[in-house]
Amino acid sequence: MDMEVESYLRPPEIEKPPYPAKVVTLATGGKMVVRQVDRDAVPTLLRAIKPTVEIARDYYDVVGARLYAELIGWYRYRVRDEFCLVGQIDGLLVGIVNSRSYSPHTDISLHTLAIERGLRIGAHLFASKMEYSIEYLGRDEVLITAESPIGFRRWMIEYGLEKREGQHELGGATPYALTREMYFKNKARLVAGERPVPKEIMEIAEREIKIASERDIREKILGAAREIQ
Ligand SMILES: CC(C)(COP(=O)(O)OP(=O)(O)OC[C@H]1O[C@@H](n2cnc3c(N)ncnc32)[C@H](O)[C@@H]1OP(=O)(O)O)[C@@H](O)C(=O)NCCC(=O)NCCS
Image (cartoon, rainbow, N blue to C red; front, side, top):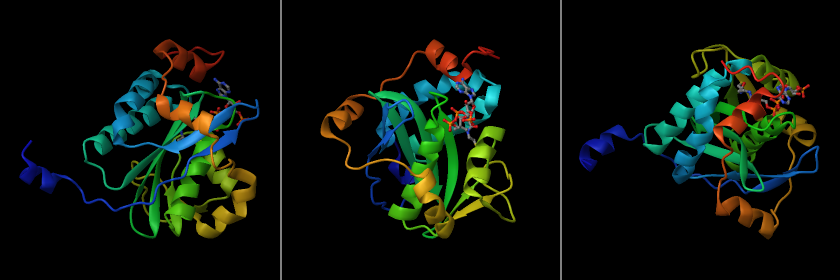
């Protein structure tokens, strides 16, 4: 690789304190580890996202295709200051979230994708990335948009987000803000999880990111409907 040209192509990157892993107890009693992953996890995550780009239901196709592109962009050093958190139950990947930092004051929420459904896994992962931006990166606000009615209900309504002027970087859609003040107002109700993660649970999560088969991913997302499009 010509590193001189590459140095022009790579956007600059800021140092970030890490997101400390946590464990969320789901309504079923299942334990979901939420942890940050590095670039080297991307090829594995892409295997789980790939089947979603053919599922139109609940806008998995739009979100899956965009998330796929964002993660490749990050893997190949073409996106600035992106971070990615994953949810795992017994090592199995059940959801992915990503964001990127726009400035020391503002993060931009990119995507939330739940592979296991009906347990508010997406809601817990979204709350985790807000927690990272506000509490650990010290941002004043996060700019958010929604591509699906479920997303709109989960973020704009549940958090009471503030509508802003201008365009979100996801297709120019209307941006909404989660401010530091709104985050702390909603924290007790919406941000779950305990730290530290017990050693034996963390070891299983870190040993391998297990990916369900393509068929299982489709079935989990579609549930009873099975309307693969
Ligand atoms: C938005 C999203 C992250 C929310 O994840 P979540 O909090 O885990 O919520 P779920 O998707 O499991 O469930 C949402 C609702 O649909 C229902 N549902 C839909 N399909 C389901 C299925 N196959 N199995 C179980 N429940 C299902 C749930 O019961 C739930 O109802 P509720 O709101 O009354 O609790 C997730 O729906 C998702 O990944 N959607 C596609 C991508 C997307 O829209 N991302 C957000 C962009 S703004």
